Length: 243
Picture 1 (cartoon, one colour):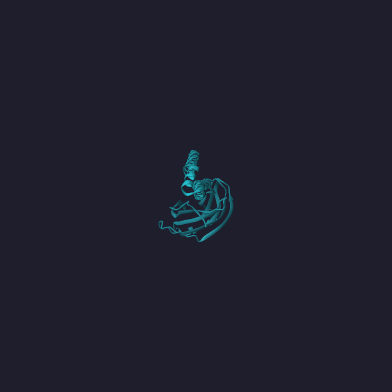
Picture 2 (cartoon, rainbow, N blue to C red; picture 1 turned 90 degrees about the vertical axis):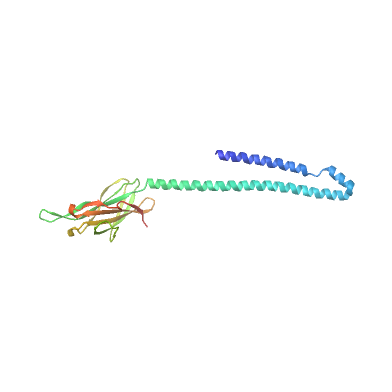
């Protein structure tokens, strides 16, 4: 606001200086009657009238040139102000967009999940066998989300080597309210009978209220010697934009 006041004062001062200068120049160059009489005596009345007329034309031409220059100067100032206004509008729009994106991030849906409880099969003789894992999924964000599907893969774990397979897909259609607690959403049977420690990885696909698609990951080690307890690996619980 203060900068605009300074620019306004500068513009007024510039205008006053230009007007005073134009008046002075006009007064200085204005052909006088005394000059016309002197020329009439020296060159004759007819010739003096022609000279005076020419001087009048030159005089008004100078006036027009002066005011044209003043108007051009004001036009340049207007162009400068328009450029400043355009830059200000652009900066304001960018700031508004960043603010909107910041609000979206703060209020974003955050759906995470992964292997939870063990699944058992009753053997009929009072014993049970572990046959898989229940996948628990919850919404930890501030806005609702639309669960779409999950993909998962499994391979023998021999130290983390970055290998990921997504050979299986389960379609899940559900609406998750904000701060929905994690609960079992589906059951996946796994080949535990081999007795090998497994790397179990997957993705959970969902949409937010703005229509943007996302997925979160799970990557766990299922330990054969510890009743298939699961332990998170390096890239567990990551959030990515989905295509």
